[in-house]
Image (cartoon, rainbow, N blue to C red; front, side, top):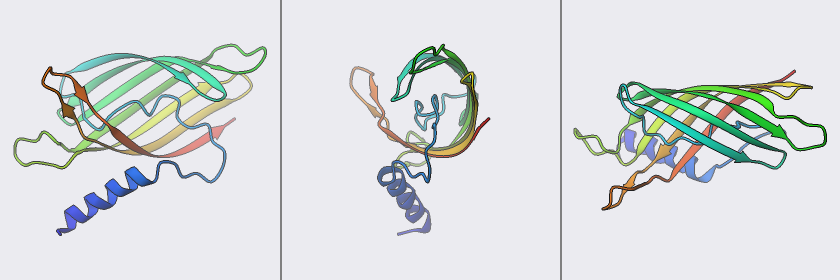
Length: 167
């Protein structure tokens, strides 16, 4: 087995077998887990709307994703998070991310076993009594399955590394 295939297999095993590793309680990303490894393409934009239901908060946010090149895209996210509890009002939430796809499953030059990308993200959430800043990176792997009718099913996995600051 070649070195490149060994690295790919190791990365795939990490993505699938290590869903969460943390050493302390953390808030986590509120908007960062809703993207596959596939980049949108140069000049292509997408709009999205999402609702997040968590243990201690409910969030609603929108995204604007734009392709800066065939393999690079960025996303701006804006919304509100409503922490559970009495006297809690919805709080402002802003996020940005940048992603580079380094393996393309649909490559015409040579067949890759899956889509993989690496990215970075930043999130800001104002909880009123505290502010959360999230900065991190991610490794994303996905495999697109296309059906005869044109629909796609894309299972994916994402490994996040992040730093959080609550002030």
